[in-house]
Length: 410
Image (cartoon, rainbow, N blue to C red; front, side, top):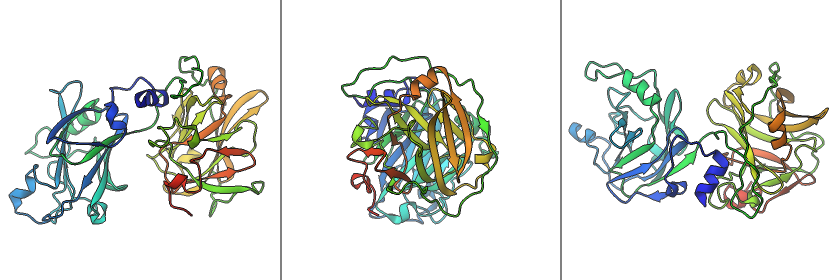
């Protein structure tokens, strides 16, 4: 059932199949295990544990052993188990000498972390995230390592560098060998949505007919940079509004965005307030709103950051200068709306009180998204909020001021 949800939400045309058991935490039981894992489409998360005893300054030779209790290793493969394209080695501790992490295809020597992982806590959540131009490794959300594929080291002792680093970035990794990771947990978390067809979540509803992903023919209108506000405020007409956290629907409790109790029913096209989100915007992490029809069928997602604006099946473009010029990390109020203007369904994205992106939806795009009846948030944190207007919205049972216990109570 979970595989059906993944396909419904994020498309069937992945570069490779994800092991179905990896939609939730899975225990690694062997010293060497193999998994099907498309790194282009998923973030690989590893739940590791700090050993009770460890040495941050061991003998020099001990530093390079990969079978010690603090070390994890992954071999990356593309197209077959015999086609190794990468070797990643990292540790649950920060060594005094900085021999913490190495990507064999990019680094001539081990690199140092930014800080001691997870602040020395027992449990650590690592996340490997591969982009087109670089890769990142975070621990409990803190960036510990970053490597641009075009900036690999140069060393006479490793003649393959730096070309091997660029080759790693170009490789279509679809399987991974885990080594020395018994006792740890792994799972896959999806990245930006692809171009899925409208399909039905696993519930008793009518399956909409799939269509070829439509294209937007009307060019978007680009606006100038609006004045930023000191702090986001609720619009004056929202007398009965409350700020709720953007409850993440990609959880087992929400049946991976298929449980309507994790959504908000809202006449997006007929209202005049849109979906108001207060969030921090950056270059890589997307703000993501899942859109559904009245029957609970997933229509697609609207996503935006400083780099891109996406609407599943219809829009995939670079953010206009009005958005790209915003300082990364700025927290402010964003308003996403769909409005019927002279019979044309028009998408608006506003920031700081001004429209910064506008696009008219035509053809199959308009037919699809004119049916929006409810929404949810995908892969967003408790630190972001949205404006819940009781008189115009109906929140599901799990959309509460603390996201049914998933977020701290305010």
